[in-house]
Every structure is written in C-alpha cells, then in structure tokens.
Length: 61
Image 1 (cartoon, rainbow, N blue to C red):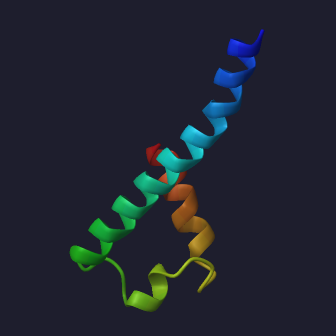
Image 2 (tube, one colour):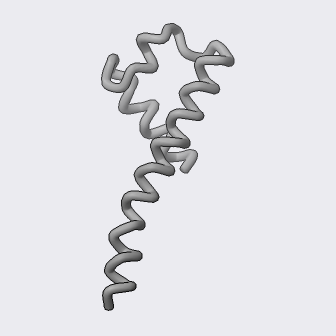
C-alpha cells in the first residue's frame, strides 16, 4: 500500500508542474510572436483577461 500512496501523492505535483511549464512556454511564445499587447499582460492576475488566458492554456493541456 505504501507504493500506491506514494505514486498517488506524486501525480498532482507532476501535473501542476507540467501545467506551469506549458503555461510558461505558451505565454513566452505569445509574447515573442507579438500577440501580447505588453509585458504587463503576461503578469498573472494583472488584468481581467488572465483568467481567459488560463482557460486557453487549460484547453491546450
């Protein structure tokens, strides 16, 4: 049972880190292609569109 508990406890951490990595890569590519209007837009929670960007990233993942 210890092996099952250990593997289950790692899954959420891996998924969260993977999601953060994908989100970072997505936002960097968006910035480099000029799709972001400014660096301020890329700050988390900086504007009302941040939740929509998060939804876009969730759709990608």
